[in-house]
Image 1 (cartoon, one colour):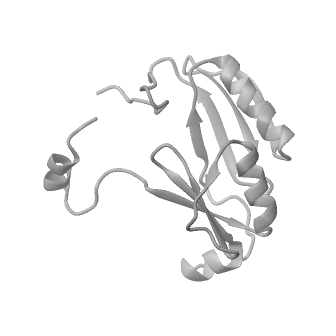
Image 2 (spheres, helix red, strand yellow):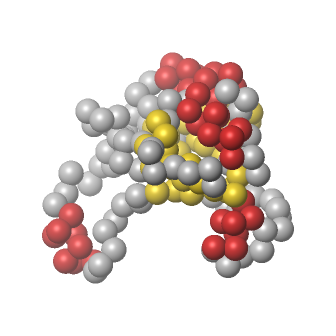
Amino acid sequence: MPDLSVVRARVGAMRPFISLVTLGTTDLPRARAFYEALGWRESSQSTDEVAFLQGAGTHLGLWSRAELAADSEVPDDHGGWGGTTLAHNVGSPAEVDAVLAEAAAADGTVLRAGSETFWGGYNGVFADPDGHRWEIAHNPAWPLDDAGRAQLPD
């Protein structure tokens, strides 16, 4: 892991990592149950209006889609896919299939079953109950550290 103080001095005030991804939901209790079924642990900072789920370095927020749109100053027009997918890397093709099965069992929708990729890996895609897309990938060129985080080559 690089010394982030050096990176910050080179780049500026923003450190190059994502702390929290907030997903807009139309049904907070359903979204909470879905992510808890996948192993995300809810923080004591959660309220009736927003859930914060602890991950290994990057955390998830679940909030009303309408409130999130207003906070981001964009219309909540349900205009379709917003050009974003989330990715979760695992250590093997079997783990890809296991995560996809867990998502399906928790009322997610598997959009693409695990399969070999053009880039030499193996991946599949599911959508959570609000339609947020997750790529589950095994990339043999990106080893996982002891915490299970993908390590990009230099």
